[in-house]
Length: 564
Image (cartoon, rainbow, N blue to C red; front, side, top):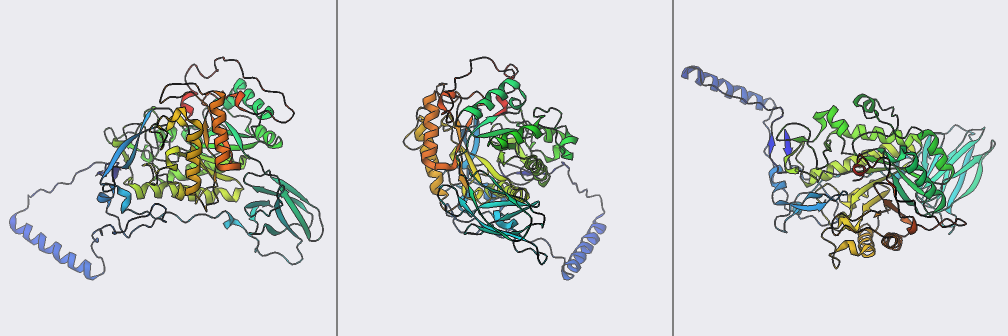
C-alpha cells in the first residue's frame, strides 16, 4: 500500500481482482461448503483469522510526556481533523505544514508514538573490558581548564576505541607496554592529546579549554570555488569565527568529494566533486583550531530518488517521484534503505576527520503539493515522529563509536509548537538522540511572528532571543546544546530589506545571551558574510568587506538552491 497525507491508501502496483459467476449454481454451492470446512479446520489448527483493529486509547497526551504507542492504531482516525497551514521554507517559498486546526480536531490529542530508546553517548564505554594481567593502565581526571570543574561528557579515543569518563570526570583505560597517544574530546572544548610513554601505570590530569562555536557555511559549489573558499578561510583566520560547516551531501543528493560508498558510486552521486582536497584541508583546519561540521541533507535527494524510485516519495497523479517547489525529489523517510545509505555517507564523513555530523532536511517535505505525496506508510503524527527519531537513534548508534558529535537542523517554529509541526520534528524527542539541535531562527522565517512581535523581520534580537529562551526552557534537563542558524541574507518574506551589520550583531548577541556558550552559525547561500558584524581576532586588524562582485557560481543560480 502507498499512503498519502490525507490518510487514504491505494494498492501499489495497481491491480484489480474480479470474480466471475460462471459456475453452475450447484457447483457454486459445493465450492462454498468446501471453503467453509477448510476455514474451520484452519481455525482449529491455530491459524486464526486477522484480528480487528482496536480503537485508540482514550488517554490525552501531555505536551512533554514520553510518547507511548498503543497496541494498535486506528490509521483512519489518526489523521482525522488535521488541516494544512502555510509556513515559509528557507528559500522564502510558502510551505505547507500540517497542524491541528483546533483543540477538538487536533490529531495529537489521542495518538501516541513509540520512539526508539535513546542511544546514550556512554553506551560505547568499555572500561570493564577484560585486560591481560600486568597490562599498564592510564588513570586520570578531565577538568575544565578555566573553572577546574570535572567534565563528565568526554569521549576518549584510544587504540581505535571510544571510551567515556565517569560522572566525576575520572577514567581508566589499558594501554600497550610501548605507550601511545590518547585523544580526548568534549563538545565545545578544544580536543587534547596525551602522549603515554612506555612503562607502568600512569596518573594524569587533563584540562580541556572551552570555546564557543561561531561558524559560517560553505555550499557544495562554494567549497570548490577558489575565490569563495579563500574569502571564507580568511574570515576564519582573522575574525572571531572558529567553525566551518561544509556541504558533504548537498540539496540535490550530490556528494562533494569522491565517496567510496558503493551505492553513492552506483547512483552517480559523485559525478560532480567540488571538495577534491578533503584529505588535505581537514587536517589543516584541525591544526588551526577550526571546528569542522559536515552538513548532510537527509531526505531531499533527487539522485537517489531517480536511481531508486521505489524508495522515493511518489506522486499519486503520475506514479513518479514527487517533486517539491524547487523541482527536487525527496526520498521516503520510512524506508530503511534510505536510512542505511545516509548513515553510510555520514560514517564516511566522520572517518574523513569531521568533528561533527549535521543532518539537515531531517523532516517530511512542506514545499509543494504535499496532498499528492504518497509514502510507504501512513504519514500521521505517530508515524512521522517514529521515522525521524528512529533515523536519529540509528545514526547516533553508528556514529558515536567513531568519536564524532551528532547534530540536527530544525525549523524555528519547532521551538514554539509542541506538536511535530507536521514534519516529524518535536524538539524534546529529537534531543534524546543528538548532541546539538540547530533551530533556524531566521526572523524572515517567522511569517506569523511570535507573541508580541508580528512583524518579525524588524525585530531580529527579540525573535532570536525569545525563541531560543523558549527552546531552552522546554529542554531543561536535557544535556543537548542549542546552536542556532542566524540570518545573514536579504529578507524574503516581508519587505525585502537587506540585513545590516547591526541586524546580524543583534542576532549573535541574542544567541549568546540566551544559550551562552552553545554558539551560533551564520547562513548565507552565497557565502558572502557581513564582515562588519564579526569581531577581529586578538591582535588582528579590522577586516574590510569584500567588494560587491558577482560570484562565479551565481550566473546559473546554483548557489541559490543550495540553501534550505
